[in-house]
Image 1 (cartoon, rainbow, N blue to C red):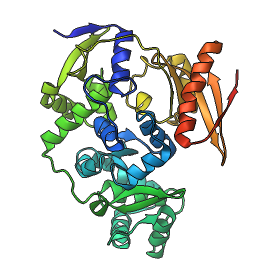
Image 2: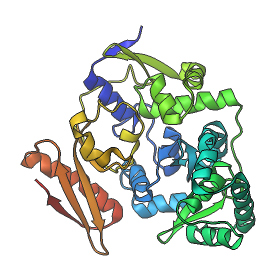
Image 3: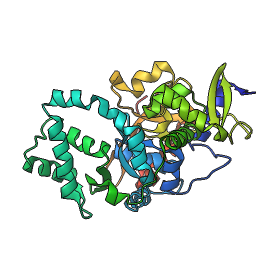
Length: 369
């Protein structure tokens, strides 16, 4: 029989799944282990992606994370929903083949809007493939210049579309920045030993990783996160059933990692400073466990998909924050969304101090209210 959970218990389990509380079966200590735990971590904003890793790796600095990415412990590409994610390097190809290709369905329509043809897109793949062959690594600006030299337009959103297309086709991937500049490399050269999976194996593995990294979740949550059809999402969950358990949250059946239902549970009182594009909110369609609908507009102003960095207390979003990094300091502006007394504000500053330590800079705090 599924275990019945209150909303608070479900939230505690979800924080555990998201590696924001101690997990009974794992203690990831490297970038590779954290990314593999989740399967994919949204990371279109690099600074947010780095801190998403750092907040789960206590004592790790930004330089440590960047060095791990240079060692190819993970890479960035567009594996699903047309959005950049961090994925295990060896898993990038099967993920692109399973979920990434689904975003190609609307590519023809988008190309028509941009004044590009399928021939243009395929030529861009060939041009970039040739330019990067032999271990090459080009900045975004160099890639666009190479495309223009081949007679392909890159103005407006054309350049972005062509770079995206080459990666979703499995030819290129996003390599670590050189300085502040994004770079690209050939996927086959950056991850030369790809993991090969049959389709049903891939569905099961992706389902297991999503549930263990986000649960409790429903089948529809998995479909929304992965971009799979609901039929395929359910197929993957069924195939991964031996590694999963079911619970009920307010009467709704949900999946969790099999190690969690019998683990000791306590009500969370943690205070966390999370980046805007963290799986804590981005990994779900229904965020009501973590986010009061009244605060939605503050977290996603204009409902445009750009998430603000959040302050989380006891699993609930209680504020948003912004940072301005200078050479010798990081200035942090905090906007509470719920009343915070002096003691609570001190805990928030302590959590934000972890971020400053991650950057190796002293912090200066400014409270808006």
